[in-house]
Amino acid sequence: MIIRVRHAAAACALGAALTACGAPAAPPAARPAPSATSAVPSRPPTLAPGPAGLTPVFKNGSRDHGKTVALTFDADMTADQGARAASGERFDNPRLIATLRALQVPATVFMTGRWAEQYPVQARSIGRDPLFEVANHSYSHYAFTGDCYGLPTVSEDRMRADVERAYTAFRRAGVPDAMPYFRFPGGCYDHQALRALSATGVTAVQWDVVSGDAFATDADAVARQVLDGVRPGSVVVMHCTRSAAPATERAVRTIVPELRARGYRFVKVSQLIGS
Image (tube, rainbow, N blue to C red; front, side):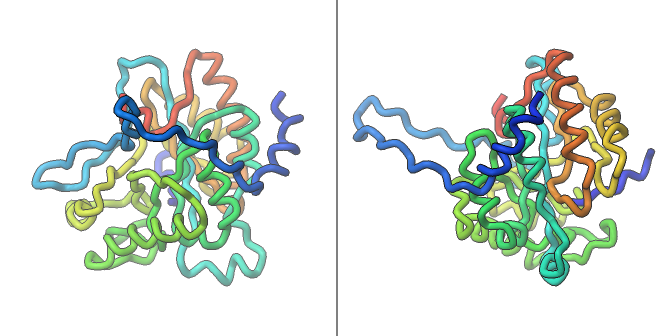
């Protein structure tokens, strides 16, 4: 989801992390046989449906449960951008993922199904890394409302299918447990869209801090915008697309140590919702 803002010594580890970015995950350890005392695996936390069963919307966590912050990264690729990818445009950002790994920063990646199809090795690597969680950003990255930053639109009768198609793309890429969280392309939604997705059981996840990294080239400006906006429980929206957000990785290398120095702890969206 690309947003245009209308208002105004980990480096040594990066090479190794980049090399491992697409490496297959190790096979899971054997599990003990079930017993009467075995714990039942917990399901990811979600919000209760809104009025009339509408899809609930989460924007930030509690301001009173400690200094936590969730960095989220939208891995955007619109359904009709295949020709641009074939001609060499890069919609991925493996160096960003490597930096998050080197700095040991948990994060939530909102991925489009089309992105997972284009970069299945990276999608699988991210999805199998316990440092990250993969959430749904639609299959097509078409808007769920009209007049949304010039994006093509998906009709109301196709909205649910678009979300479910993304989950199918994740499974085919080898992402084992995509989260029941959905981010609207462009962040654009209305009552009609919330009603259309109610049967999917997802929680819609927005944000309270816009990084301004979309199409930005000044990493320091992006970092300042994030650092000025973060409060306890914040959800920060950033991007994992090299061509559209080239300064993000450099900004993260400034944001992370500064927030840690201020006493913040990085968590995933699921942890904010669960708290």
